Length: 137
Image (cartoon, rainbow, N blue to C red; front, side, top):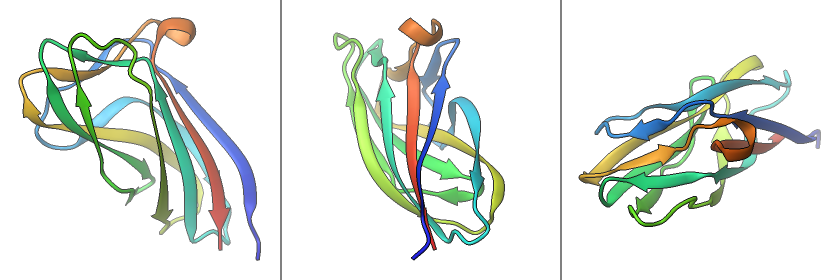
């Protein structure tokens, strides 16, 4: 079985990105990843750091997108008094295209009056979205 292990993609957010919409929207910055021609799916571990709640409690859903292919929904509850809430999850995404693809996070707020925030501020203080990807045939 062919596989390409160990692709690591990291996105550092330079400015605050708040999740307040009831529909999925791109959250934070985007990056690209080269999907091998033989790959039909991607297994990945997603790590989010320096995310926090703003204003009030918010229940949000987060998902990973590679090209036009969407991963599973991850439910997240953010509190206003909790700073830097790290989140790590795994996913498997069926791929429909190869070559250079955009990888990004999308998020939406399901309930609550607050927002989930990717904190801005550069590499050291800003939010970091990391993707560790293994492509499979």
